Length: 81
Image (cartoon, rainbow, N blue to C red; front, top):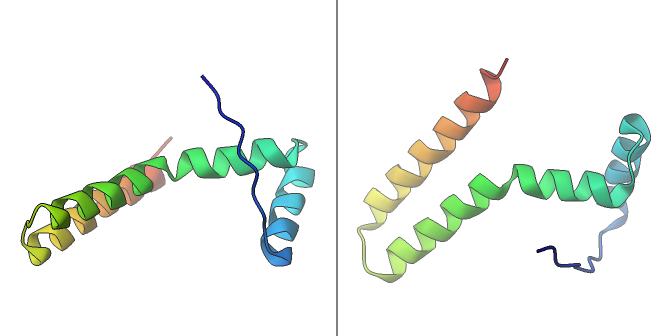
């Protein structure tokens, strides 16, 4: 299922998305959706860190786990073929 969301962007972010839209030959909404989809693992890691803190997990452990997850995401991204 897909859900439509209305967003308000500042001029600079809009200009960047507009330019990527031109470069890729895609609609701005498609570019924006792709950028958000690409950030889903980061968003999920942030949610997990928040939830772990809420349940009382040690702040240093949460920070370490979050940074490990983000590091893995970055390494996976830069080593893609």
